[in-house]
Each structure stands twice: as C-alpha cells, then as structure tokens.
Image (cartoon, rainbow, N blue to C red; front, side):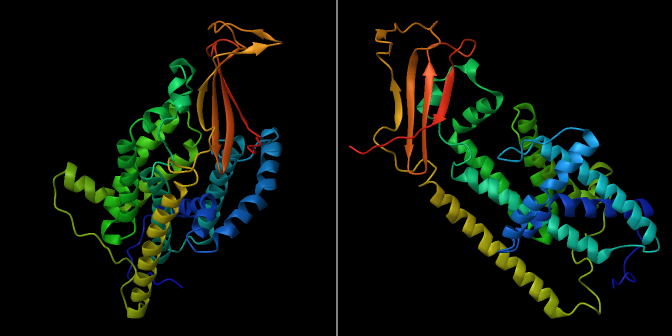
Length: 371
C-alpha cells in the first residue's frame, strides 16, 4: 500500500505519462536494471536470449520479414528496431489498461521515487562504462600504422570518427571524464539535476555523432539521452521559472516520500549505505578492470615479433613479378600483422584505391609462430 495522503494529486495526463514511462523503462532496460545488482547480470543475459524467439515471431507476423541477424556488437539491427517498436506498443497498451483499472489513484510517490532511482543508476552505470573506457584509451585507441596508411577516401564514416578521436588521446580522455563525472553526479539526490543536465549535454553530442557518422549505437545512445531528459523533467518548470521568467522558485523536494511516520530512520540509513557501497565498489572496480584491459587489448598489450605494418617490395604471381602500379587491384602494397595474445589478424592493403578492386581487406589469421 502506498501512502498518498501527503502527496499532492497529479493531473490525469501526468499519471498516464508516468504509467507509460514506467512500463517502457522496465521493458527496455530490464537487463540493465538486473546488472546493477551483483550476480544478477547473468540473469539479464539469459533473459535477452530467452526473449529472442518472441521478437522473431513479432517481426515475421507483424512485418512479414524474417530476422537473420541478432545483436552482435551493433545495436541498430532489425531485431533492435523490432524490440523498440514492441516496447512502445506494450507500454502504450499497458498504460491504457493501468489507467482504466487504477483510475482512482491520484499519485504514485513511492513508485515514482523507485523509478527515478532506477533510471539514475542505470544511466550512471552506462556513463561509468563508456567514460572510464575512454579514459584508458580503449574505445578510441591510438592510431595504428595501417590506419595512417589508409587513403582518406577509403574511410567509412564510422572509421573516420574513430580516426579523429584516436588522433587525440587527451581529447578522448576529456570526453571520458565528462561521461564519468555525469555518472557520479547522477548517484546523489542533491546533484541529480545537475547530473541529468550534464549527461544530457554529453549524450546529445554522442547521439549526434552516432547518427551522422553512422555508428550502430543510435538507438541505445538515444535512449540514454532520453533517460537524462526524463530524470530532469520534474525540475524543468522550476528551471524555466528561474532562468527564463526570472522569478523566485521554492526549494526542490529532495526527500520525496522518505519522510513521514511510515519511514523509519534505519530505512534511510540502509538506503544511504547501499548507495555508497554501490558507488564505492562499482567505480573503483571499473577503473581497475579498464586499467587491466590495456595489457590485453590496449596500448600496453604485448606484441609478437611480426606485429606491425610491412611494405611489400616484391610481389610475384605465378612466378611473375608485378610492378608496384597504383592501377593494379591485385598486387599487395602493405601487409599489416596484428600479433597479440588475444588477437591475431592479417590485413592486406592493395595498390588500388577504394574505387577499384583493391582497398584494404582483413581476415583472422591462423599462424604458427614456432621456429
């Protein structure tokens, strides 16, 4: 039972919108919510696999198209768009049913507080993951010789984005710190508004980059941007009154439903301890994990003897040496070998540019380095 006696009634449009947001968030971020709790992340991964047949059925039944590609690093596959459409439909239907069944309820103070807490920490967790990754130069690594030798015209939009971000590690670290700071601010009630506005600005830039450089994380980054705006939404009338109308505003209600005879002091203390433990364990752990990943996938990873980019000075086909002509789409110009403990790859750069039959082609290498 919720105590609505001390809560001001909400207008009916606000109640309907709240119900829609609540249901949509639970559907869209169910796995992310579970991942906030240690060991429940595995349940989230199991859930993602378990629901795949349902969305395949939706796509085939509603849209008449079969899904053959599932999320595998890209967040903008047909499967993801079907999920997005399904979640919108589910949330709209559930909000209508909920509004009809629970039409006498005037407000949801405890449910709103719990929803905003979940949104804040889901968004903060995403900011920590992406931000700390950038701080250690993992998402946008320093430019390799193979990338520097690639003609500008052969760059894909996403490849170009990765190139100019990787070209300046200080800027990449700055971008990472902006995301990380936003995550920290979101974790505390007194700074949640600043954190939401801060993160909205950061994510607006990320979403636009993803959109116009064709990075396949558009849906996810858009969701994170909307989350930040929704978290800040209750304070928007106060901000408009203060900054646009230049009128005084009342102090923000930072306690929410956590005051009153039904709330014991131990409940507030327990909530504070849980929050501090989560922040105090999650952030240092992510810093340690990302720091260690530099020795496996990053700039500090050990390299084999053949790691590097090699210029092909002599190329023979059927015993006949081919001249290094830039019009030849079969002759190799460079051979890049990635020789790392967890990653081996051979990348061939041909003489001809992207408009010809050449360009750069890569494949996973299967080498035997025994001598």
